[in-house]
Image (spheres, rainbow, N blue to C red):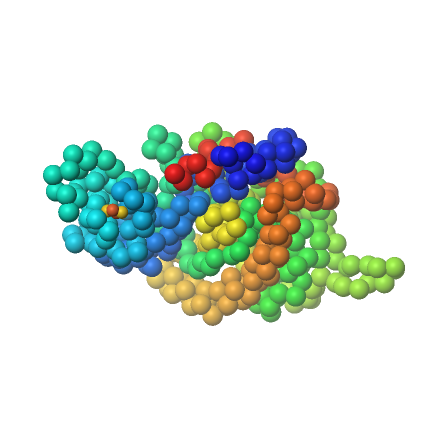
Length: 386
Ligand code: FES
Ligand SMILES: [Fe+2]
């Protein structure tokens, strides 16, 4: 481990063409990440959020959300310890009165030293913020690296007729175990007992392996970068057999018309999954694995539906509350969450990346690791937090 890195260099060297991914334990800098839903931050409200190992303040002022680092320039204390907002667009440090403007980060005053020559000459770190589809996104990175939000969300997410609803929760695992759990087609095995099956219109096999062509890398210059996996081009396994005996079968019902073959998944930088036609035909699940620090991520779970009338909106809102949230985002995805949390110890010291024993369908994960390494716009390191 070098001083600047929290990642074991011997491991990073061993993995070859996905070294950047191993190094991105705290996430990739210079990307957009969702931190809260818009309706969680009312006018004038202030909240603390974590992102890639940094603590940030977000505040809505005249409808617009701003973000600044939650650390006073003077002696490094968190401003949020006792937020003094004497005017609506400034925050004053509770300790000695350094006062910052949210819109620019400028040190506009030191209340206890009004003649200080530092005033007007220093800035606290601020980051660009955008709101889209009911989510607040922060660009965690350097000023000269800002890219359009559209390059950091899955295709279709910003469609105007898409209605997006969701929730978020903190998961005790590194963000990459979240991303890989979502994109890992083979983990369909864990979902064989899901409560969602009472509502779903799918029959799920217990496993499936992509045929050549099922997995595609997307690297268009102007668009998001990622990997797609089309389940219609998979060979399914319906029965699990030990010593000639069927011991388990994927749920199959005559009344159900579709199979998971109508589903397609894709994973995009900086760590967001799109699941087409899920948890029901006509719906799309989008979920982010937002690095909070090296050991935790914010799991931002959303479901989108194309709506054209008020009636459509109401119907989706009602189904979301009564079916998709409890049985999809809470029920189905809770299996994913505990799987990530118990995977964490194996990868925590980085050796998991070389000690794992992947099998054939896991080649999709290797594709993702390579794409992320090629297109991540920067590695977040502890040094960047200074
Ligand atoms: S530590 Fe913030 S003003 Fe002194
Ligand atoms: Fe899952």
